[in-house]
Image (cartoon, rainbow, N blue to C red; front, top):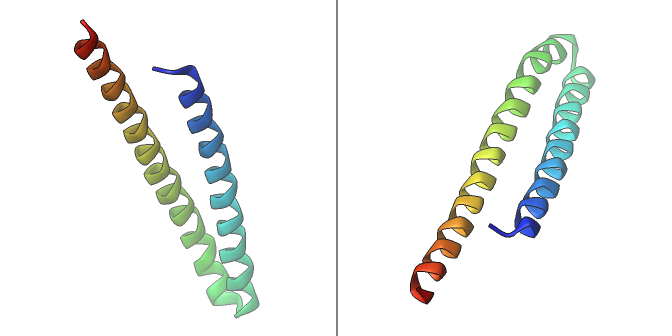
Length: 80
C-alpha cells in the first residue's frame, strides 16, 4: 500500500480526534451554561460521544485503507 495513503489517513485521524475533543468541550460547556444538572449530565455524555466518534472514525479510515490495499493487489494480479 502506498505510504502516502497511510500518512494521509493518519493526518485525517489526528484532525478527527481534535474535532471530537472540541465537540466534547462544547458539549460540557453548553451543559454547564444551561444549569448544574445538565452540566453534570454532559460530563457523562461528552466522553461517550467522544469515544463513539473516535471509534467510528477509526473504523471508517481502516475501511479506506483496506479498500486501497485491495485495489493495489487487484492491479498486481491484472499485470501478472
